[in-house]
Image 1: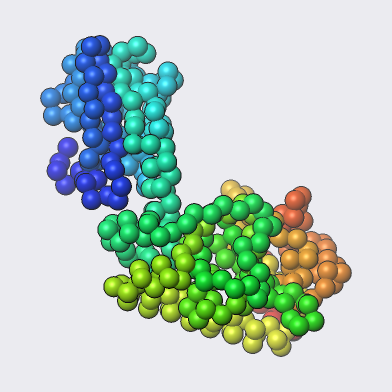
Image 2: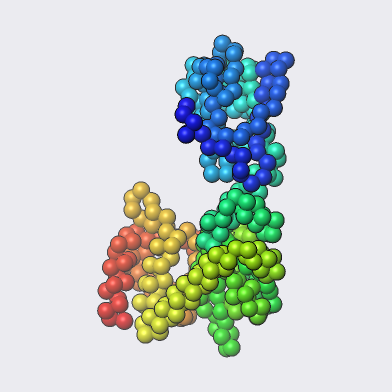
Length: 353
């Protein structure tokens, strides 16, 4: 194995995983400070096991994002994880890995603690958020000290319009809808946000009450940073503040353009445009080319998104289903049989709306 292929873990945030190796009376700890980490009977392997049941090049541990996996290299007598023979397996806290046959030499995978693995996942996910994507490992480690991890179920309110708050939120998993209500109480969905996107930045920057309500569309995970902690964090990192401003400007430009376009269009076009937007952002394409909108998005949600009422939107959805543009599934699921046909219908509708 060439030196160029080895990736050092020495500068990764947090403690590094350990391997506890046991072979008869022998027992020792090995710090997993680089990957790939090779295991076998050959003298140049990272972990050399002299047992004859172990192949010269037996197995290798690799990093997969923030997780680790072990791969059998085609050994004669196999590699076992928790008693089951495998070719590849993700390594979890306290997994027992045996080589040759069950009951032979083995190691226990110990990434310090299961909590550390979870922290690593959260750090990596947070660092992928647009405004933090260029952080150094050291900055990510500092970020870990000020973020708060939160989990929400479906239809849970993160905050309400008009509430005082001073935190920035970053979506790690799931999705949320951003809604605003007029003085008459009419609700409109302003945006749908998914992993990697941020919200709450306006109130965090100016200290004024929340300008919108944010509610989860599905089980969702996110992190938050208080205004005070964020100000201290960006004090020596002005590039992050610029990225935040760019993100905010992009959203305002998008919202303004959408409002301008939709203001002159009829409801049938607005509904087609909403379905097309949801398909592009949250569509899961199957092998047969059909596309499932993964969000649970009901008739009332669509009505709030296009500024109409439930009865009109329901009638149009059934019309689009009869035209073959959509299929209404169970649990508020919407299937697009042919996304290209939906795009053509939207283009055609724009000429007549």
